[in-house]
Image (cartoon, rainbow, N blue to C red; front, side, top):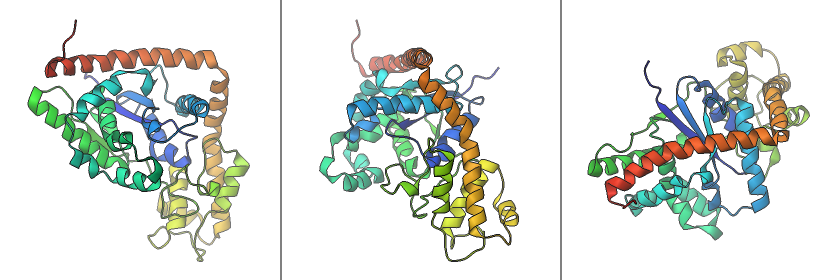
Length: 331
């Protein structure tokens, strides 16, 4: 039997996830469970580039873990763990910092964007963020990394760092390839369809949280920005309606053509209501599981401990190899 390739991904542990996170990544991860040996991290170290309230931060990280499991990432089949519980991440990140050039990091568009957004806290962690991300991926010898377009540059620098290290020391790291999901969709803001849906948007009507109740979901979709036309049609000239069609298609499995036919001769009001109800129905089982898991502290604790142990075992094998190659001494 052919050994499964390793897949690696994760999300930052800050606040609730949005529908964009779910349809753009999380739902796609669940589809990949059987095909790959999967590692999914609660990326709490990455979250530290922005100041966090400690009590809320701990709670949010645990909630993210519960959302992973509720969405279908079975911790018996996947390694679902906390990044900060595995010290190899920070150790390898420092070593890889010494194989990464300042010019490479300075070209990162996310660093430039976040430096403008958080001008009062342009810290070194924000600058070296891509190196920690490279360590995350390379520790587990990941062959496949699901990415969105905005993360493509980070995977490219990961490949550059790994290839540079391998050229000096031999085949230490697997060179990861990007996985662009066939079914994943880039979900845009409901208030401004030219921007990506984001939980950090101050306008709460711009995004659907996975924990929003049905009434809230439907209300937000009813307020979604569209255009002065009344035809449900997909096109660059109709970003708002096109975004709603992407969402509706992602949760129902219908094509743009099927959606256009279904709502032919019907107004935006009918369409927005249908999208809201379809999303609420999609999220209902996840929300029920999530609430149940939050109450079952013992089960979540057991899952975290078991998966942290596995992550440590796998990552330490790579770290030991790296240390030996570069000449760090061991007892």
